[in-house]
Length: 323
Image 1 (cartoon, helix red, strand yellow):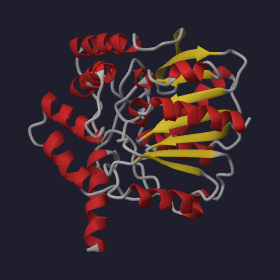
Image 2 (cartoon, rainbow, N blue to C red):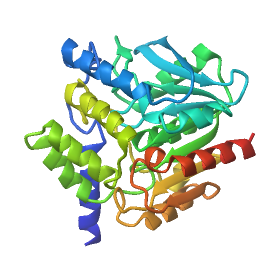
Image 3 (spheres, rainbow, N blue to C red):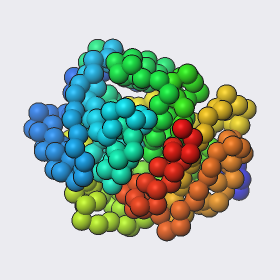
Image 4 (cartoon, one colour):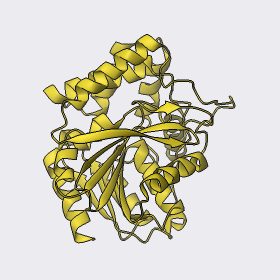
């Protein structure tokens, strides 16, 4: 049974969140959207989701080897910098429940990824490996002349944030990982079957919505509904698919010994990514013994939207205590 469980979990990873498990050549898309009409639709819902932000901000583009990266800046100019990286298919708009509180204490840079979602404009090189992510991220840091930053990710981007901390140790001082997918242990096998059902067998917008509802544990509110419509636009009209992003993987404890910075990990208490969230907690603590690992009762995968008061409070406390 154990071998079967491992096989199913690996299948889940391959289907849902990995990218380079196929042999096809990935080239940089001309746009993150399949058509100009789809791009226009997604941009409109992006702008509508950004109306949920409760803080003043400005946005700009940063030229990188991989195209122009869209960055949104808010908060106090001379305070600690925290960089927010969106989860797979997400973009800067997803942080609407958090950015206001965080901006009251820190300077906040919210990124649109260069290879999925949002308003970045890819060109030239494709993101095909983690090394590409590393080059892209370093170019963002160089543009803003940043060091000693905090980095926060959610789901897929939690893995990415941790991977960057392994490779860019002189720039990243703190890590915040929200409900990491894989990273510390295999995900449950149910994700594989749902991935096949909703994304590979006659996929459509209704099926995508059902998957997102399951992923969030059925939680929603009027603000999340607005953001979910944007997320559905990105999935439906976007040119990036699940096999077009670099693969994430599980790190063994010995691969993380160089992580000697403060790390805060929060995960949902509902058995969605993992059959038993307490097993996830034990694995995370084994991999990063000095990390603070919190399981949030009643939360699904979208912690930042489902439990924003708790999540924001813990982030602010964590960063304030480690300055």
